[in-house]
Image: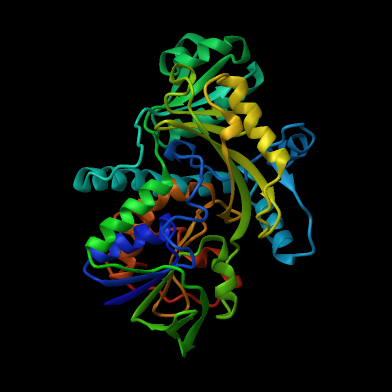
Length: 430
């Protein structure tokens, strides 16, 4: 089968690799000059199934108000007249219940844990390298209130059999020795030993090379203009390089997916949530993190990537704005220099921003649409890197008419009900 994939981020590239492995003839189209150059470029570097949880949860509205009043706030809202922004915010608030949180987290964990297993197998099969480390992640609590509040998260980890450790100061220093320099600034941590880290950009570009070895063609520097439909099928995609026809199309355009879908009368609640990162060259490895440290106070992830430290965080609701804001950089610099002083040269850090494709319930949208040959792989939010391999294998199975290794429940777009036309689902997958 001839398949065209729209988007060469980590999700689109993983989709291409696994579809090619399944025997399909695959072409990937992207406006950038290479793979992984948008949201996949500078993310926090975590492959963290243990932290796979929706932002919408009990108590979040009250916490959001408190965050907005902080000097180094993890949340920023830039109000606009865009109705899609307010629809998304309203839907997210509707998911801030105990019942919805449990349902949504279960769906996210299912995909995230499966994805980690697929990534592990991919690494074993291909030897792919991407500054990977398998040393777990540390959620660091600066005060007793945060430590006490972790009991709710621990209960959920137990429910889903996710390995974890609760650590006192001494335990923290065993896994992150550099924290010895700032022992007075934290009280303990929650460690998830099954989580991993790695450079998503390196992974995506190396996976693209592996995909090319399987026959995948990448059409870089090619802008996608519109999808051409006839009846209940998509016949081609119009681009700056002309028309591309195929038997099947997979849309993996992240935050830009809803824009292309609107012309087909498909409406999915995926909205861009802006994130920032700085990448700091290490000057003293003994003072740098070993893996990932999550600064619970500022919701900032500090990750070791080879000879660099990636510091990522902030949720900014500002539409498709890509301006680099100095106040956001200040928050990232404060977190890393406060916990890992003299570890790197922040003056030489690369400052980056990207748009996370968020759904209001946290779960990505993967699977069929009302068009028989159009499939989605989008809406992964902050967990695109975590869920990439599992999502790629999942969509390859669905496109091939094969039952995926995990349940499809809650992953298709029909979970949003009447907002979309009835979905066409193969009987083998329903």
